[in-house]
Image (cartoon, rainbow, N blue to C red; front, side, top):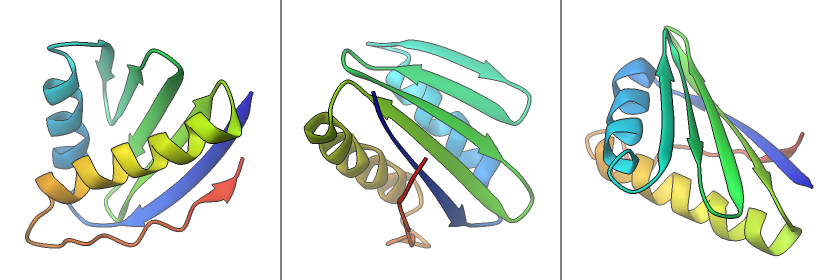
Length: 95
């Protein structure tokens, strides 16, 4: 299992987290709770939590290749919803 985590500075983390979960809920298994969400992709899972100053995204994937691809999927979708702030700074680190 490959893992990475990014802390994305934004004051709209909760808003973006909700938008991402609602967007993906049409095709994927999604859990949305208080200030957190989980999206289960076919080969990866995204765990997201928000605070007043950031959105934290943790990815778990079947392989390094899938992890790299999913980093791009998550960041591009987030930038689409955060178009006023985009591109958001994703500093992915091994988790």
